[in-house]
Amino acid sequence: MLNTPSGPTLLGFDVIAIGSVLAGIAALAMMMAVYAALTVRDPMARRVKALNARREELKAGIVTATAKKRQSLVRNSEATDRMKQTLEKMKVLQDSQVKQIQQKLAQAGYRNKEWAVAVIFARMVLPIALGLIAIVLVYWSNTFPDWSSFKRFMVFAVAIIAGYKAPDIFLSNKIQKRSHAIRKGLPDALDLLVICAEAGLTVDAAFNRVAKELGRAYPELGDEFMLTSIELSFLTERRMAFENLAYRVDLDSVRGVVTTMIQTERYGTPLASALRVLSAEFRNERMMRAEEKAARLPAIMTVPLILFILPVLFIVILGPAACSIADTFASQPGSASS
Image: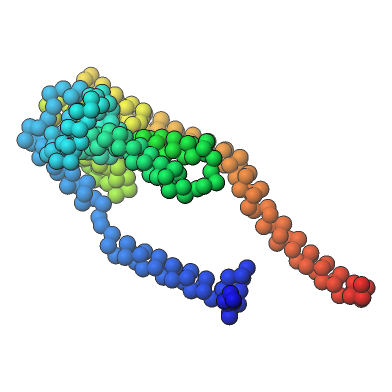
């Protein structure tokens, strides 16, 4: 015989048991939240450590001769060396592909360019691993016996494609988020650069000051400005520092700022006036993007309004009336005699 719940039930489930499970999950979530709040670390410590490492490299003269050869001389790890040797033996490691992935890593905020070899290795290994898992689950173990041969082949193909595209999707997502954060704080940074330039600070000192002021509000932008300030202080050509900034950030607005800084350095034009014009343009662009999102909001809200809000509204308005009508018909003597 089946065990029937002794307490109150809802749709055949014991309410007390479900409530106990939900209370346990809520208590566990609360404990995890308290632990995360107590063990929070300062995000500036890691960035300051990386910037200090870059400063020491520049002090030691570990810089490239030209802007075309942007390669970071860091300590080689055994894992990346093994991956590189394996890829070179298989003739799948191309210099153009490595440089492209190194730029994507820099745009995503990863300074170690050796990880480009790991990304290429993951492109090769993940499709094989996910494909083998799909073969074991779909064909060998017969986990889904009702599936047709076409559906099984589609699952196998999707697993292989997902394994190949997963590193690129991850990097693209990181680049998009980081670029959005930098774009958000760029007008404020240019305003501070204008103030620093009018106060008589040099370009590297102005970048350093802006990085310190905006490091908390916009950590990604502060990180890039601080690194640019360090490179301006130690690189032999100041143009290389600005080009490295455009190399690390995937934004047209940053490229415009870099072009303006290079022109002011070359021709001696006033820096404050040029940056003021750029700041006004970026603020207008940000306002236009906000207006575009606001104009697109009614069309986006139409589907949630129809699917989720209107049915609940109809139930709340017509529910009491329907219940009262049903009670009225049920209390009539004719309905009881019939």
